[in-house]
Length: 192
View 1: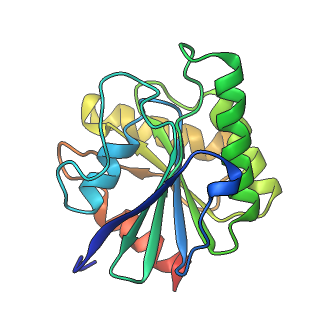
View 2 (view 1 turned 90 degrees about the vertical axis):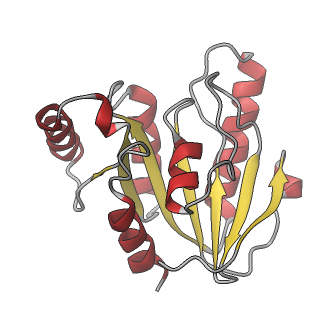
């Protein structure tokens, strides 16, 4: 995809501050520290557009971006971060669920999985919730350069079998710039 214009739109901390979106939306969901920000920066061909951090739980707000005045990308807070209070985790969960349930322009959820951690219980819960609510989803397996190609393919096949998926997960690497075309293809297919 040709990226003519990429802008930060706004951040939201609670359901009352969620903006009304004018364009089709694609949400990025995943556990803390799975590489969501690196994925967003890579597919937007920007270095530090979405904030990256070595410490998990950095994204605490829903962050909105606009691409080419035609598409909204929505970075959801990471779930499963243990060093945040239970109350804060619950607040994030409610914010994420409110967004996913009420965003009329939401066309696709990219469920981000870290290849080294695999598909965990919270990922399975979110996947089940997305399927139950008939939301279009695409699994993206990040950091695929961190293990051998054979192991990455095996993890991908296991996720397909365990979850009876109709579309294949995408293997992505911000370091090797792998999977970008496939992600844009999935976004285009869902938003066209």
